[in-house]
Image 1 (cartoon, rainbow, N blue to C red):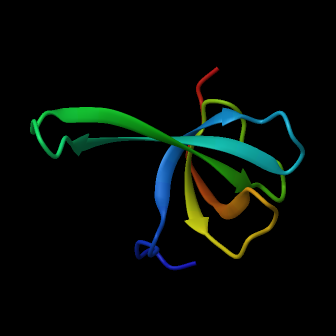
Image 2: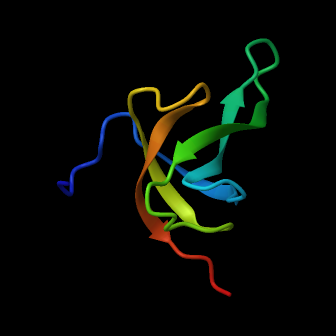
Length: 86
């Protein structure tokens, strides 16, 4: 993989690692309200495929979009940006 930024890549925090080879990743972002102009905090939870079970809860990870792996999973773990300090 090259050092350039991947198209469609997102960075988030692992929220759950209860299932084998699957993770729940939370992505926090802010968007502007269309009418009032106030910035509102929002979050998206994505189901991610982690082939080698490398990540754990609290890790900051980079994910990329891929073909649908299951009904809810269409994202893959690209790399672990930062491991959680225990």
